[in-house]
Image (cartoon, rainbow over all chains, first blue to last red; front, side, top):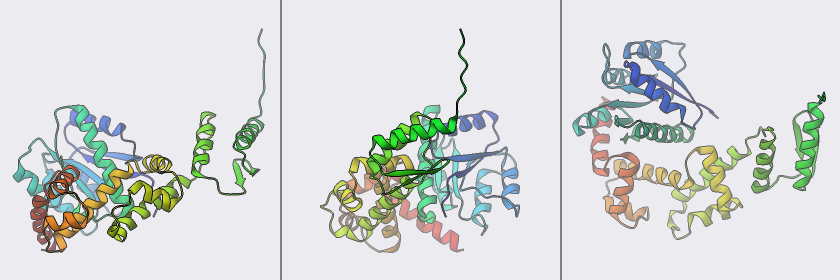
Length: 148
Length: 185
């Protein structure tokens, strides 16, 4: 019952963005592990393996070649095994229609990628802190929605 | 000239421990390598002082007393929000320090350290959770919800909701209803 580390996955095809996120996570105080996948395919391959250790939260880019973030999201939400995982999806688009669609498809967090690295760090820290509350206190994840 | 010294870590650590435990006037026995038995439970303030001083010597207290305290604070808050909501006039700080027998300053320090958010944020997150629940399960207006949860106004509730979730209550409600039917299909 007592969990001491938040298990975080990141799926991002862009090398630069991967390193931005990696740096942002380094400042997060909640104890965590970070595992990085280079595209949606490799993420889903891992998640669908029987023996895989599942994460508490997945951050993913909405635009990825092969399998997009939205496609991964749909697959995750339709799988019994994976339905508990918190999904944070990010995009450069801030259109309300896109945001709503992501939530309706089951995303928990929608991030409009900020231009400033400092803003990204702040967002990542906040999301991790709040997700930690959901994990440790068993809050209702069905109602968990957070938009940045 | 060089002086060569040889030290015994076990002795140094024991002496340091004794020194610090004595300083706080604690009744204790050192029962073995790395284990101290305290005769009585010590107040959180003293405990914090002890862990802080020992830390400066590179000695870490391996213990989850703080985690236990944080858990008790959470339970008290949740109990307050769900059961005692009829008594909103009591200040949270007074309520918690009364219930847990520690100063609010100590409580909030321990809480932030363990949970990575402040007691205030924790309360807000949980209140918003209740708002979400009410928005989705009961057919009541936002005004009614604001009143039930002791918000000073609907605007205050809406602002807080938006700040925590990034969405307005109305948007949240709309999305959640669609989402629910999506999941059920």
